[in-house]
Amino acid sequence: MSNLVEIRWHGRGGQGAKTASLLLADAAFNTGKYIQGFPEYGPERMGAPITAYNRISDEPITIHSNIYEPDYVVVVDDTLLEAVDVTAGLKEEGAIVINTTKTPEEVKGLLKGYKGKVCTIDAKTISIETLGKYFPNTPMLAAIVKVSGIMDEQDFLNDMVESFKHKFAKKPEVIDGNMAALKRSLEEVKGL
Amino acid sequence: MSIRERLSGNEAVANAMRQINPDVVAAFPITPSTEVPQYFSTFVNNGKVDTEFVPVESEHSAMSACIGASSAGGRVMTATSANGLSLMWEMLYIAASLRLPIVMSCVNRAVSGPLNIHNDHSDSMGARDSGWIQLYGETNQEAYDNALMAIRIAEHKDVMLPVMNCYDGFITSHSIENIELLEDDKAKGFVGTYHPEHFLLNKKEPIAVGPLDVQPYLFEHKFQQAEAMRKAKDVILEVSEEFYKLTGRKYGLFEEYKMDDAEIAVVVLNSTAGTAKYTIDRLREKGVKAGLVKPRVFRPFPVTEIAESLKNCKAVAILDKCDSTNGAAGPLYTEVTSALYTTGITDVKTVAYTFGIGGRDVKSSDIEKVYTDLQEIVASGKVENPFRYLGLKG
Image (tube, rainbow over all chains, first blue to last red; front, side, top):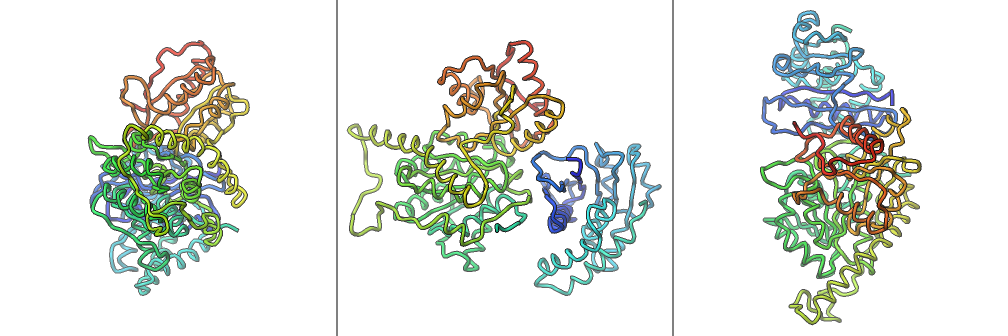
């Protein structure tokens, strides 16, 4: 199953890492893939570190464990870099993408000598400028699509319009802002 | 054409219930089964079903309401987990002994204490002798398919027993995965309508349900109940065959994976079987003749069939996601080894593992360790310690 892509999300309760992992699963599903999207349920509280996972494959996925050797890691909150071993098991031919105002070079020192690709994105600025509020999960979703190349960017954007229309059926005014956040994020990932 | 979807196990089961459109659903929320009645209640409110939804104040009342509604002649469903199942205890036996074809999803979770909301099989395994048929499913697909088939099995005139549709809490209940749903009309056609032979609301045939049954007849009634459980095996196969013709998805009493030439095998229930398949594929690439038997039907237990499946193996590991705390090993081990002995198979080495208690994650490397242990058992011809633990911190 060499086409199996495994992604681990690190966030804090309330930031939407779980939702982002489910949205990524949805988007990949809509491009015809087999998917898994699941959080690691623990004693969740606002602000506590949480982990969520994605498996994406061209073939049915049978394994049902957590992910220990991910191809990609997404860090939704850079304060986690000192609290959680975010690169644990991360494959060197993979990549990590971190929500931070810093550059990849500036955060490398916090990654315990991880030798793979380090990408950063300022999801906070993008979110505030496009959505008017801080919702890091939308930019991070686009960032992982960009970094992992798991699907065509235009297919991804087309699919997300549809899912936002469904998700925000009662507040369509936020759809444009979310789409703008995705598009900007695809452009603004550093370290590629 | 079936409908390609991605749903969590709970959402899939709630959709099966929507398609079944039962007369009554009575339920009380408990993690991780809560979403089943939660999703279902939205179907009720949105008019997708015409079910009477009874939001009771406890699980004892949930099962009591199900028993009342089923006795009255209704098609009845519910869902629970762990301590919720514990609170139903008294009523589980009554539902089975009154021969009421209630279908309940048991979203497997550790029974307290200490308090734990995560997956193991201590809840449904504790209820294994309550007289319910028990089906176990690996994926959201199997949880959905079993929910549909459970109705037909429960209501079959040769059976008339309640069915527990068991699947793993969180791992299956809350993970989003691909699934093929039946179109509503096909699902409805498959489950059909329920026509009970005897029921309380039949004014042409007044009957009593659940009266005192003492020395002269209780034994005979219990024998009839046991006979129904024995007959359920053939009915499960018949219903599964019909389901296969409808969907192309094949179900038996258990699933065999790479068992044709397997020298070593694992027997395990539910989602861990998927991780075992993943592990087997990798071991097979290295030439290890590893196989898997995943029981789907635990009650009735397929004694001769499972023994037949394992008889050519040199060594078999039976993995229990609960502990019988009997000083030996868990219920699956006890049943499988008993099946082997009963059928005269004594040259297959067996070893028990207790694993995954309270949601301890099961890695492919854990399963690989079991196969490595089995290879050692085959090489030495000895089982040094038959009762082992997997994934326990040292």
